[in-house]
Image 1 (tube, rainbow, N blue to C red):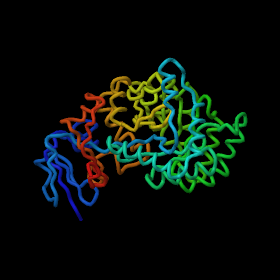
Image 2 (image 1 turned 90 degrees about the vertical axis):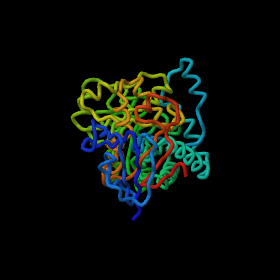
Image 3 (image 1 turned 60 degrees about the horizontal axis):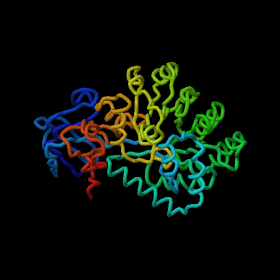
Image 4 (image 1 turned 180 degrees about the horizontal axis):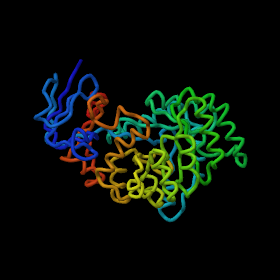
Length: 392
């Protein structure tokens, strides 16, 4: 059994109120002890016993849990910078642009897709993401959805089947026929490879009945549901999420009072994706309204080539604080513990004893600098399961 003690931590975020102050469980002048990949102790340096084999001096810097990115689309080929330029001069965003990525993804080799996936995962890790969810959704036929999930599954346990992303061109005007494919042949190929099933329930994608069919058929095959909900307009996405017991409703840009009440009462995590609004010049979701209503909020990157081509959770934290009226503490909690709850994970997203020792060393005295110093690469060390990954 190997052990590590991290000492001289100016600010330690544990996400355990029993260990420190506030919801973040903040401890000042702290120490963290890791044994065999798990947190063994966390607290004031004068209290935590020194029983470790190895020691690391944090140098008066902050230590925070590794970020948990619970919504990302990382298996694809090509890029869509032209759409971004068009939106910046006034064009609107719709779901239709996904078709160009589908064509490029189908034409790409496994090696090309794997190289792109690995590049994005390396980016995410460098900015502090230690747990990441990865969706399919750019194959939209049985063969290409299955190979996307196969590549994702080799790299993360949080794999999501998103055959119901949009209706592909060959099924234009035949959405119900495509839904049947998603729920039959495609599901047969994909269910053994995924943990989650997702659907884009929104204008230009899938309606209430189609979404319910996809999620219920996926659940019958052992996949847990999550939903792209209410991104482009107010629609049935949140209601669909509640009807199937989804872990999270993602985007949640356009909500009425009933939607907010459903999210709060049903315990559905609202996963907010500020990178999408930033990249589409759309209204930001009202995080303050959700938090004040008692809704659990997660922050995730929504990394994808069309509407949020970023892997940086620190960027999302800064935007959430500036544009969505979250406090720095709330944003950091949502990007760590909130993301873990969106994935129904209890082992990541915090630094309580017994949790997986995924943590970051920031070149700053406090986690507040993640929002206070936007665009600055503050993550200077990344540990996963107690092992230093970066710098390696």
